[in-house]
Image (tube, rainbow, N blue to C red; front, side):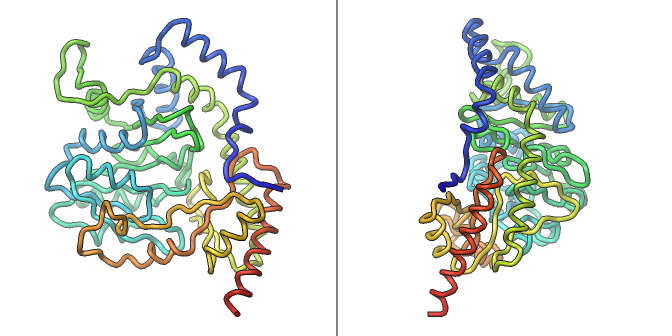
Amino acid sequence: MRVPFLDLAAMHRPLAERFQEAWDSTLATSGFIGGRHVDDFERRWSEYCETSEAIGVANGTDALRITLAALGVGPGDEVIVPTNTFVATVAAVKAVGATPRLVDVDAETLLLTPEGVAEALNERTAAVMPVHLYGQPVDMPEIMDVAHRAGIAVIEDAAQAHGARWEGRRVGSFGHAACFSFYPGKNLGAFGDAGAVVTNDPQLARRIRQLSNHGRGDSHHVHEVAGDNSRLDALQAAVLDIKLDHLDEWNAARRAIARHYQELLADLPVRPVAQRPEAESVYHLFVVQVDARDDVLSSLEQQGVGVGLHYPIPCHLQPAFESGISPRLPVAEHAAQHILSLPMFPHMTREQTEYVGAAIARAVETSQGTLTA
Protein backbone atom coordinates (compact mmCIF):
# COMPACT_ATOMS: atom_id res chain seq x y z
CA MET A 1 0.00 0.00 0.00
CA ARG A 2 1.00 3.61 -0.60
CA VAL A 3 -0.44 6.27 1.71
CA PRO A 4 0.01 9.87 0.52
CA PHE A 5 0.80 12.61 3.00
CA LEU A 6 -2.18 14.57 1.64
CA ASP A 7 -4.89 13.65 -0.86
CA LEU A 8 -6.64 16.76 -2.15
CA ALA A 9 -8.20 14.91 -5.08
CA ALA A 10 -10.26 12.78 -2.67
CA MET A 11 -11.63 15.99 -1.17
CA HIS A 12 -12.39 17.63 -4.50
CA ARG A 13 -14.02 14.79 -6.42
CA PRO A 14 -17.42 14.91 -4.62
CA LEU A 15 -17.59 18.69 -5.14
CA ALA A 16 -16.55 18.77 -8.80
CA GLU A 17 -20.01 19.76 -10.08
CA ARG A 18 -20.26 22.70 -7.69
CA PHE A 19 -16.77 23.87 -8.62
CA GLN A 20 -17.75 23.78 -12.29
CA GLU A 21 -20.85 25.86 -11.57
CA ALA A 22 -18.72 28.43 -9.72
CA TRP A 23 -16.32 28.62 -12.65
CA ASP A 24 -19.14 28.95 -15.18
CA SER A 25 -20.83 31.75 -13.25
CA THR A 26 -17.55 33.62 -12.83
CA LEU A 27 -16.74 33.24 -16.51
CA ALA A 28 -20.23 34.35 -17.56
CA THR A 29 -20.11 37.57 -15.55
CA SER A 30 -16.35 38.24 -15.95
CA GLY A 31 -16.40 39.23 -12.29
CA PHE A 32 -12.89 38.07 -11.55
CA ILE A 33 -11.92 40.68 -8.94
CA GLY A 34 -14.22 41.45 -6.01
CA GLY A 35 -17.97 41.19 -6.47
CA ARG A 36 -20.59 38.82 -5.12
CA HIS A 37 -18.38 35.77 -4.54
CA VAL A 38 -15.92 37.75 -2.44
CA ASP A 39 -18.65 39.56 -0.51
CA ASP A 40 -20.44 36.30 0.25
CA PHE A 41 -17.34 34.51 1.42
CA GLU A 42 -16.16 37.41 3.59
CA ARG A 43 -19.55 37.55 5.29
CA ARG A 44 -19.70 33.80 5.88
CA TRP A 45 -16.07 33.60 7.04
CA SER A 46 -16.52 36.38 9.60
CA GLU A 47 -19.62 34.64 10.94
CA TYR A 48 -17.81 31.30 11.09
CA CYS A 49 -14.88 32.85 12.97
CA GLU A 50 -17.26 34.63 15.38
CA THR A 51 -15.99 38.06 14.36
CA SER A 52 -17.70 41.09 12.85
CA GLU A 53 -15.28 41.67 9.97
CA ALA A 54 -13.41 39.64 7.37
CA ILE A 55 -11.17 40.97 4.60
CA GLY A 56 -10.04 38.69 1.80
CA VAL A 57 -6.44 39.11 0.64
CA ALA A 58 -4.13 37.40 -1.81
CA ASN A 59 -2.40 35.01 0.62
CA GLY A 60 -1.70 34.33 4.28
CA THR A 61 1.67 36.07 4.32
CA ASP A 62 0.09 39.27 3.03
CA ALA A 63 -2.60 38.91 5.69
CA LEU A 64 0.07 39.01 8.40
CA ARG A 65 2.13 41.77 6.81
CA ILE A 66 -0.78 44.08 6.03
CA THR A 67 -2.28 43.60 9.48
CA LEU A 68 1.01 44.57 11.12
CA ALA A 69 1.19 47.66 8.92
CA ALA A 70 -2.43 48.57 9.65
CA LEU A 71 -1.66 48.42 13.37
CA GLY A 72 1.24 50.82 12.87
CA VAL A 73 3.98 48.28 13.60
CA GLY A 74 7.23 49.21 11.89
CA PRO A 75 10.89 50.19 12.29
CA GLY A 76 12.01 50.38 15.90
CA ASP A 77 9.33 47.94 17.06
CA GLU A 78 9.72 44.35 18.18
CA VAL A 79 7.16 41.60 17.63
CA ILE A 80 7.21 38.45 19.74
CA VAL A 81 6.99 35.33 17.55
CA PRO A 82 7.51 31.64 18.41
CA THR A 83 10.56 30.24 16.67
CA ASN A 84 8.67 27.01 15.93
CA THR A 85 6.57 28.27 13.04
CA PHE A 86 6.61 28.52 9.27
CA VAL A 87 8.93 31.31 8.12
CA ALA A 88 6.04 33.43 6.80
CA THR A 89 5.21 34.54 10.34
CA VAL A 90 8.69 35.96 10.82
CA ALA A 91 9.03 37.24 7.25
CA ALA A 92 5.90 39.38 7.70
CA VAL A 93 7.49 41.11 10.69
CA LYS A 94 10.68 41.78 8.74
CA ALA A 95 8.65 43.06 5.77
CA VAL A 96 7.23 45.98 7.78
CA GLY A 97 10.68 46.88 9.10
CA ALA A 98 10.10 45.59 12.62
CA THR A 99 12.34 43.16 14.52
CA PRO A 100 11.10 39.64 15.28
CA ARG A 101 11.76 38.62 18.89
CA LEU A 102 11.95 34.85 18.50
CA VAL A 103 11.11 32.86 21.63
CA ASP A 104 11.01 29.21 22.63
CA VAL A 105 7.90 27.08 22.95
CA ASP A 106 6.30 24.64 25.37
CA ALA A 107 7.99 21.23 25.46
CA GLU A 108 4.71 19.30 25.29
CA THR A 109 2.58 21.30 22.83
CA LEU A 110 5.41 23.06 20.92
CA LEU A 111 3.31 26.25 21.10
CA LEU A 112 3.94 29.77 22.40
CA THR A 113 3.17 30.19 26.11
CA PRO A 114 2.03 33.20 28.16
CA GLU A 115 5.21 32.85 30.23
CA GLY A 116 7.31 33.02 27.07
CA VAL A 117 5.55 36.22 26.03
CA ALA A 118 5.97 37.81 29.46
CA GLU A 119 9.70 37.03 29.54
CA ALA A 120 10.26 38.50 26.07
CA LEU A 121 8.56 41.86 26.73
CA ASN A 122 10.63 45.01 26.67
CA GLU A 123 10.16 48.71 25.94
CA ARG A 124 10.26 48.10 22.18
CA THR A 125 7.59 45.39 22.11
CA ALA A 126 4.67 46.46 19.93
CA ALA A 127 2.88 43.18 19.30
CA VAL A 128 2.82 39.43 19.78
CA MET A 129 1.90 36.89 17.10
CA PRO A 130 0.78 33.61 18.69
CA VAL A 131 0.71 30.77 16.14
CA HIS A 132 -1.99 28.10 16.36
CA LEU A 133 0.42 25.55 14.96
CA TYR A 134 -0.58 22.10 13.64
CA GLY A 135 -4.25 23.05 14.17
CA GLN A 136 -4.01 23.30 17.96
CA PRO A 137 -4.98 26.59 19.64
CA VAL A 138 -2.64 28.56 21.85
CA ASP A 139 -3.89 29.53 25.34
CA MET A 140 -5.37 32.79 24.08
CA PRO A 141 -7.08 34.07 27.27
CA GLU A 142 -3.75 34.02 29.11
CA ILE A 143 -1.89 35.51 26.15
CA MET A 144 -4.48 38.28 25.92
CA ASP A 145 -4.10 39.00 29.62
CA VAL A 146 -0.32 39.39 29.31
CA ALA A 147 -0.71 41.55 26.20
CA HIS A 148 -3.40 43.75 27.75
CA ARG A 149 -1.25 44.48 30.78
CA ALA A 150 1.70 45.29 28.50
CA GLY A 151 -0.39 47.45 26.15
CA ILE A 152 0.60 45.56 22.99
CA ALA A 153 -1.35 44.28 20.00
CA VAL A 154 -2.18 40.60 19.45
CA ILE A 155 -2.29 39.15 15.93
CA GLU A 156 -3.28 35.49 15.77
CA ASP A 157 -1.54 33.46 13.07
CA ALA A 158 -4.34 30.98 12.43
CA ALA A 159 -3.06 29.72 9.07
CA GLN A 160 -3.19 26.09 10.27
CA ALA A 161 -6.23 26.29 12.54
CA HIS A 162 -9.40 26.89 10.52
CA GLY A 163 -12.28 26.14 12.88
CA ALA A 164 -10.24 25.29 15.99
CA ARG A 165 -11.59 26.34 19.38
CA TRP A 166 -10.26 27.21 22.83
CA GLU A 167 -12.82 26.53 25.57
CA GLY A 168 -15.52 26.56 22.90
CA ARG A 169 -14.50 29.85 21.29
CA ARG A 170 -13.15 30.03 17.75
CA VAL A 171 -9.52 30.93 17.20
CA GLY A 172 -9.33 34.24 15.42
CA SER A 173 -11.88 35.87 17.71
CA PHE A 174 -9.47 36.60 20.60
CA GLY A 175 -6.84 38.97 19.26
CA HIS A 176 -6.99 42.42 17.73
CA ALA A 177 -6.94 40.55 14.43
CA ALA A 178 -6.29 37.07 13.09
CA CYS A 179 -4.75 35.97 9.82
CA PHE A 180 -5.60 32.91 7.74
CA SER A 181 -3.97 31.24 4.78
CA PHE A 182 -6.10 29.32 2.30
CA TYR A 183 -3.14 27.65 0.59
CA PRO A 184 -4.51 24.51 -1.14
CA GLY A 185 -3.25 22.10 1.52
CA LYS A 186 -4.91 23.90 4.45
CA ASN A 187 -8.01 22.55 6.17
CA LEU A 188 -9.90 25.14 4.12
CA GLY A 189 -7.90 25.52 0.93
CA ALA A 190 -8.36 27.43 -2.30
CA PHE A 191 -7.26 26.43 -5.81
CA GLY A 192 -4.14 28.56 -5.38
CA ASP A 193 -2.95 31.22 -2.96
CA ALA A 194 -5.55 33.10 -0.92
CA GLY A 195 -5.89 34.54 2.57
CA ALA A 196 -8.04 36.57 4.92
CA VAL A 197 -7.94 38.74 8.03
CA VAL A 198 -10.72 38.73 10.63
CA THR A 199 -11.27 41.28 13.39
CA ASN A 200 -13.92 42.82 15.61
CA ASP A 201 -12.52 46.33 15.04
CA PRO A 202 -14.28 48.13 12.13
CA GLN A 203 -11.62 50.83 11.91
CA LEU A 204 -8.82 48.28 11.75
CA ALA A 205 -10.78 46.38 9.09
CA ARG A 206 -11.08 49.56 7.03
CA ARG A 207 -7.31 50.18 7.21
CA ILE A 208 -6.55 46.58 6.21
CA ARG A 209 -8.97 46.81 3.30
CA GLN A 210 -7.37 50.08 2.21
CA LEU A 211 -3.83 48.76 2.39
CA SER A 212 -4.78 45.64 0.42
CA ASN A 213 -6.50 47.62 -2.36
CA HIS A 214 -4.04 50.33 -3.44
CA GLY A 215 -4.91 52.59 -0.51
CA ARG A 216 -8.43 53.30 -1.72
CA GLY A 217 -11.01 54.65 0.69
CA ASP A 218 -14.67 55.12 -0.17
CA SER A 219 -13.89 56.33 -3.68
CA HIS A 220 -12.40 54.17 -6.41
CA HIS A 221 -10.29 57.07 -7.67
CA VAL A 222 -9.10 58.49 -4.34
CA HIS A 223 -6.06 56.77 -2.83
CA GLU A 224 -5.86 57.92 0.77
CA VAL A 225 -2.66 56.03 1.60
CA ALA A 226 0.07 54.22 -0.30
CA GLY A 227 -1.28 50.68 -0.40
CA ASP A 228 -0.65 47.29 -1.95
CA ASN A 229 -2.39 45.07 -4.45
CA SER A 230 -3.40 42.05 -2.38
CA ARG A 231 -6.98 41.10 -3.18
CA LEU A 232 -8.85 37.81 -2.94
CA ASP A 233 -9.82 36.62 -6.42
CA ALA A 234 -13.50 35.97 -6.99
CA LEU A 235 -12.93 32.42 -8.21
CA GLN A 236 -10.91 31.55 -5.09
CA ALA A 237 -13.66 33.05 -2.92
CA ALA A 238 -16.26 30.92 -4.70
CA VAL A 239 -14.19 27.75 -4.14
CA LEU A 240 -13.71 28.60 -0.46
CA ASP A 241 -17.43 29.32 -0.03
CA ILE A 242 -18.26 25.87 -1.40
CA LYS A 243 -15.70 24.15 0.80
CA LEU A 244 -16.79 26.06 3.90
CA ASP A 245 -20.03 24.04 3.87
CA HIS A 246 -17.92 20.95 4.63
CA LEU A 247 -15.21 22.32 6.90
CA ASP A 248 -16.70 21.18 10.22
CA GLU A 249 -17.35 17.71 8.79
CA TRP A 250 -13.77 17.48 7.52
CA ASN A 251 -12.34 18.71 10.83
CA ALA A 252 -14.37 16.10 12.71
CA ALA A 253 -12.92 13.43 10.41
CA ARG A 254 -9.41 14.70 11.16
CA ARG A 255 -10.07 14.42 14.91
CA ALA A 256 -11.31 10.84 14.48
CA ILE A 257 -8.17 9.94 12.52
CA ALA A 258 -6.02 11.54 15.24
CA ARG A 259 -7.77 9.45 17.92
CA HIS A 260 -7.12 6.30 15.88
CA TYR A 261 -3.45 7.25 15.49
CA GLN A 262 -3.16 7.78 19.24
CA GLU A 263 -4.56 4.29 19.85
CA LEU A 264 -2.18 2.72 17.33
CA LEU A 265 0.86 4.52 18.75
CA ALA A 266 0.04 4.10 22.44
CA ASP A 267 2.51 1.25 23.04
CA LEU A 268 5.28 2.59 20.79
CA PRO A 269 8.18 4.91 21.67
CA VAL A 270 6.49 7.62 19.60
CA ARG A 271 5.29 10.81 21.29
CA PRO A 272 2.40 12.68 19.65
CA VAL A 273 2.49 16.42 20.30
CA ALA A 274 0.34 17.01 23.38
CA GLN A 275 -3.15 18.47 23.14
CA ARG A 276 -4.41 20.74 25.92
CA PRO A 277 -7.82 19.73 27.37
CA GLU A 278 -9.19 23.24 26.73
CA ALA A 279 -8.30 22.99 23.04
CA GLU A 280 -10.35 21.55 20.22
CA SER A 281 -7.70 20.95 17.59
CA VAL A 282 -8.48 20.62 13.90
CA TYR A 283 -5.34 18.54 13.24
CA HIS A 284 -4.05 20.32 10.19
CA LEU A 285 -1.05 18.13 10.91
CA PHE A 286 -0.53 15.07 13.11
CA VAL A 287 2.94 15.57 14.53
CA VAL A 288 4.92 13.12 16.64
CA GLN A 289 8.39 13.11 18.16
CA VAL A 290 10.57 10.05 17.77
CA ASP A 291 14.20 9.11 18.36
CA ALA A 292 16.38 8.42 15.32
CA ARG A 293 13.90 10.52 13.35
CA ASP A 294 15.75 10.45 10.05
CA ASP A 295 16.00 6.65 10.12
CA VAL A 296 12.28 6.36 10.91
CA LEU A 297 11.45 8.83 8.14
CA SER A 298 13.52 6.88 5.62
CA SER A 299 11.87 3.60 6.62
CA LEU A 300 8.38 5.06 6.30
CA GLU A 301 9.14 6.41 2.84
CA GLN A 302 10.46 3.00 1.80
CA GLN A 303 7.18 1.48 2.99
CA GLY A 304 5.17 3.90 0.84
CA VAL A 305 4.08 6.29 3.60
CA GLY A 306 4.19 10.01 2.81
CA VAL A 307 5.66 12.07 5.65
CA GLY A 308 6.60 15.70 6.32
CA LEU A 309 8.79 17.78 8.63
CA HIS A 310 7.17 20.83 10.27
CA TYR A 311 9.76 22.25 10.80
CA PRO A 312 13.31 20.84 10.67
CA ILE A 313 15.04 24.24 11.15
CA PRO A 314 13.67 26.68 13.75
CA CYS A 315 13.32 30.23 12.52
CA HIS A 316 16.11 31.58 14.73
CA LEU A 317 18.52 29.23 12.94
CA GLN A 318 17.35 30.10 9.43
CA PRO A 319 19.97 32.10 7.49
CA ALA A 320 17.39 34.79 6.69
CA PHE A 321 16.67 35.52 10.35
CA GLU A 322 19.88 34.80 12.25
CA SER A 323 20.76 37.82 14.36
CA GLY A 324 24.45 37.05 14.85
CA ILE A 325 23.79 36.56 18.55
CA SER A 326 21.96 33.25 17.86
CA PRO A 327 20.18 32.68 21.20
CA ARG A 328 19.74 29.11 22.36
CA LEU A 329 16.09 28.06 22.20
CA PRO A 330 16.54 24.47 23.35
CA VAL A 331 12.98 23.15 23.18
CA ALA A 332 12.49 24.11 19.54
CA GLU A 333 16.00 22.97 18.63
CA HIS A 334 15.41 19.55 20.22
CA ALA A 335 12.00 19.20 18.59
CA ALA A 336 13.42 20.05 15.17
CA GLN A 337 15.54 16.90 15.37
CA HIS A 338 12.67 14.65 16.48
CA ILE A 339 9.43 15.82 14.86
CA LEU A 340 7.70 13.91 12.09
CA SER A 341 4.35 14.70 10.45
CA LEU A 342 2.22 11.68 9.54
CA PRO A 343 -0.38 11.49 6.75
CA MET A 344 -3.49 13.47 7.68
CA PHE A 345 -6.45 14.32 5.46
CA PRO A 346 -10.21 13.99 6.09
CA HIS A 347 -10.83 11.28 3.50
CA MET A 348 -8.13 9.00 4.91
CA THR A 349 -9.47 5.46 5.36
CA ARG A 350 -9.16 3.32 8.46
CA GLU A 351 -7.12 0.85 6.43
CA GLN A 352 -4.67 3.60 5.50
CA THR A 353 -4.36 4.77 9.12
CA GLU A 354 -3.70 1.23 10.33
CA TYR A 355 -1.11 0.72 7.61
CA VAL A 356 0.71 3.86 8.77
CA GLY A 357 0.59 2.64 12.38
CA ALA A 358 2.08 -0.73 11.41
CA ALA A 359 4.70 0.97 9.26
CA ILE A 360 5.78 3.15 12.18
CA ALA A 361 6.06 0.10 14.43
CA ARG A 362 8.37 -1.54 11.89
CA ALA A 363 10.34 1.67 11.39
CA VAL A 364 10.86 2.21 15.11
CA GLU A 365 11.92 -1.40 15.64
CA THR A 366 14.47 -1.10 12.84
CA SER A 367 15.81 2.24 14.11
CA GLN A 368 16.20 0.87 17.66
CA GLY A 369 18.22 -2.01 16.29
CA THR A 370 20.43 0.48 14.47
CA LEU A 371 20.92 2.50 17.66
CA THR A 372 21.79 -0.62 19.67
CA ALA A 373 24.29 -1.74 17.07
